[in-house]
Image (cartoon, rainbow, N blue to C red; front, side, top):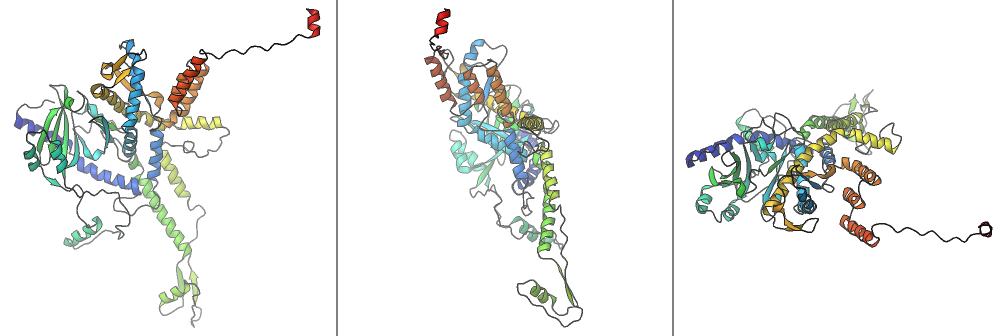
Length: 543
């Protein structure tokens, strides 16, 4: 985009672009509130929680198939034109990258982001450089893009993040700004969370007194459980961070705006991150070709959860009628409630002088397959996300051996593998930015395989970080182990490479012990000497 050079036009351009990016923010926020409530409680935001929330454990299981924080490891793939000498530096940088990934808690941040990306439709990982690399998960309601009909973040000309900051924190961050006092006095602060102490359902009834018709149902147990809504007593300032592509500099222009429309910073992206790179990485397990945010896995399950809630309520109502069935008092007079109370208490006595009077219990007939519908609904959950019974650890009819079960699991995991490969792309994008940031900001000295020292900046720029052997998903684990042992049997790899592929506990200690044994034994096990056998008398005579 061409950014005006005149200050007044430049400011108007920034504010206009920011508003265009946030055009669907409030609409999406309402949808995300509903999806969050169904994920946490199995019901809508204003409905009582479900007796059994099937969505939560289902998405938790799906997340475990798509990403494993413990086994994920990376490797560096160099370009075709890279000098072969650069391959000597790859092992040291790969080790440093994996260590930095774990030390910065990026594995756990990505796991959380993937989980909520299934609940919503997307989440974002933002990398911030401040005495190290710090990853943050950002929910989609805090992000806006210029073109929602265009997928992929790198194709967006502008992207906006909304966040909140306290006035004292803003004052501390503007320590070097020449207009520090003026900016702090102009921005407006407020409470991020609704400060009303009246519950939302009761508040709607009070406000509806202006309308003579009061409608709707209210759950009176409004404070019976924690709804996981944060409350912030400190006043906060709403801030916007606009990243807009500048055609003249071939880099992003980063604009920090405080409400109401106070432009605080206007600087190139290279001063905050990397030249030509955006710090936001989208995690979208269900992408759509014409909708940037993708599809929500949780939304696919809403109607099934509602159906399950309805059926569960009907079953409980039927069971309660079976335990305490409706009663018909035929031929009785007087206060029937007292007579019914006497019938339903221990030792109760009921007498009447009316002829032909009788008491009938109208208990419902219990179906033999009462819970069969619930089992069918649960199987629909698995069908929606492509999780078979074998993957869930359940038995399958007709399975006769472990090899047969393994083959079924391999074939039945095809849909989950497809989704895992989509997640792998986002994972590789974050890891690639990690190594680029290490080249830009990490002065640590490394040693290549030939013993020569170097720093990350001296490594080639023509590289891509890949997830090594699809290790991000446990679905591929057994295939990887089988492949590693087959390669070792075929003598295509040595023992040290076998340890690298299997990633056992105490990996480095095992490799050190292996090198020590090979060094002491000369690289081969000594051949055993054949024992001396004394010839027999018959053999001596023949000789």
